[in-house]
Amino acid sequence: MKQFIFIIILLISSSLFSQTLERTIIGSSGQTLSNANASINFTVGELVTTTNSNGTITLNQGFHQEVIILQVKLSPITFLQGPLVTSGTIIMDDSLRSNNVLPTTSPYADGLTCETTVFDTTGNNAIIDWVWITIRDKNDEAIVLASQSALLQADGDIVATDGTSPVAINLPSESYYIAINHRNHLGIMSANAIPLNTSTATTINLSDTTTAVFGGINSVVDIGNGIFAMIAGDFDENGQIQNTDTNSVIQLLGISGYNNADLDMNTQVQNADINNMLNPNIGKGQQFN
Image (cartoon, rainbow, N blue to C red; front, side, top):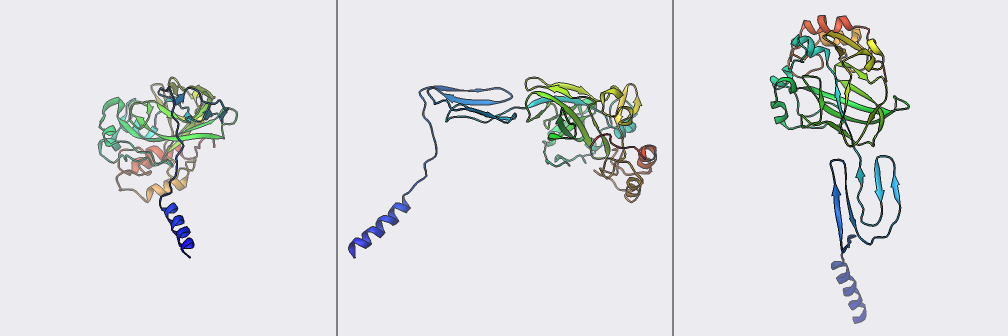
């Protein structure tokens, strides 16, 4: 009996003082190397195993290894018809920002956020609104490889959520189709696959000529002064500007704030949104899926 009790106490004691050992490594020397694109830790004297990669994430060499995430950098340029008509210049109106109705959380699927101080900038680099970027396969533009929210400046530059930096997306250096969407304008896409790399930002101007965009003149509206802008009026974001968009906007006349019905983006839903934006664009559609 005493022996049985002793065994029980021993088992309980073992469970109380058991521990979990995490994998660690002590190396006589080694280093951490990093740049803006990736970082890797290594030690001397590790066993060489193998290198595995799916094109975006690479695992390599030994027990002490890091996940290397490659990011292409891009600086797209585009304009929205709505705030250009409101401003009457080649710089878009920033009423959403200046009236403090522009949200710090993206309205798109990833829900990215920015600091409120990002909206303190005025002038050409003032933030107009959020946009949605999709990166598409060079051999089939219908295949979306990555997507991300970004911010649009008054002068047409699209930047990261810090309000100034190029957009960085988790993909390796390669050629891709680049598409830009906005919550109440028809989306546009580059006419061709564009080489992007992880070391320097590639400027992609989708506003200076109709040949820059997929679908040509059917994808954009000529604002004048050499600017071809994204077409306003897609209230329901279905890629078509239709009577259903008009009917929906009519129901919201008189409201103010951050709303898809505010097609000229002056913070007010007014008859001008219907007369100047919707009616001239009825029947137009996005030129890609």
